[in-house]
Image (tube, rainbow over all chains, first blue to last red; front, top):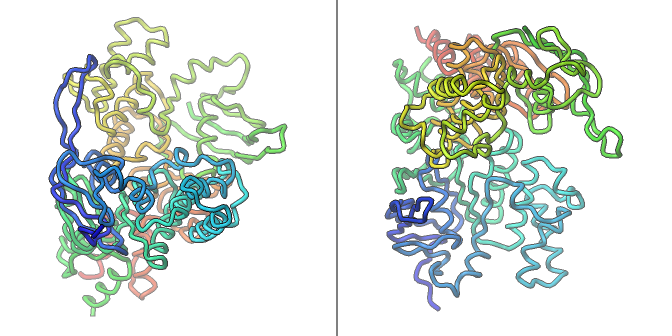
Length: 289
Length: 281
């Protein structure tokens, strides 16, 4: 079949509604969780999606591997229409998903067994399963733990095992839905580093949903969701230069960006959208001369 | 009235091959009315430590004193202690269960054996303290947003009239506005009620702005204990144990190493901005 869309993920007028019911099952109303979203994500991109709790970002992401189907509009994953059931297995294999709580996604007794579970289910020959397990665990830096029990790993390590489980399916795209929400700073860094490495080395498309602004600064593009639609989009610099707009949307900017913004408000001639400590220090050096 | 932790050791699965020491010889004094940030990476022992403070866990050796009395003495009334030392667990909204917010908050004080009037009065006050309007009282807690649910759960503990309020990662999973709202609420409760607050967190940025004292745990031991500025001056050591100072601390360090004459102890955005503006006057 000829592909309709070359993008990794493409949505056209995507709307998702669900019906709220009271205790007796009577319809109380309809909530539109995703409202007329048009986005396209190219192969190899690193995309971040921001938005406050309840803005619709997770509901949107669940359309990217056919966990949810559009009420209206269409979603294509690598050219496959997600509402066509025949594409389901294809889509789930091409677009893997990592969720917030690592404890809910690990099933194996031993790390390598857990990572091998996915490929085994799609009938990969045993020898190749082991090859995939090895390369996946190496890609996230967890190979030395392959014989451990997942119960004795830290949150960040468990989350990297979950990612390895997705990589073992050889996906073209990985969707990470707040993968670091329950982790400590070190665990967060390791998970983000693993995601960036997969993007840069293996050229896997990454879609990162997060509440941590610092994690977003390396992405190619950022979408900001509010009330189910895409409210802002652009490069991290374009997005984070709009400090007040982001605050209205219940979001924030990295602390350095906020400091630069504060200094600008107090009269220093700094550029908008400073993202790193180095940039701020460089600019301060220039003004002081 | 203070809490004193005296040479406390705690070993998980002590008599098995899996035995490991979660707390090693901890001695701390927590005076009344202090606002404390308890920080450490996963597995550092901070959750184990707070569970000692209201007698949920008994030390393997050492003692915990509340108001000068050993809380693990067989005669000690630990039920009364649990009302005085209120513990808000991680994701406390998972523990909401009643049909409406008001009934849910009544559950704790009702179990203290108080009169119905007193129970309802306390629940009313507690919900007001967390910023609920009368019309929200009879909503189902399950229809609320994540941040609001968390407020109801905190009100449930406040209704016990605790003298010490301990919150384990109260901002986990919330969006940035939700995080600052909850932290603002906790800080307000500390000011208005004058109670001791212990805030368990991973996030230095969150803690830096609010608390008076930071206790850093690492591998079951107290690694640092002091004011935020004192503790963050050890940022290199903090990194080694999986933590970090707030980003602004690094900005000030970077400026200093570039030869700017700045004071590097700034820990909030305002302090840092004040310090940097001095350079341009």
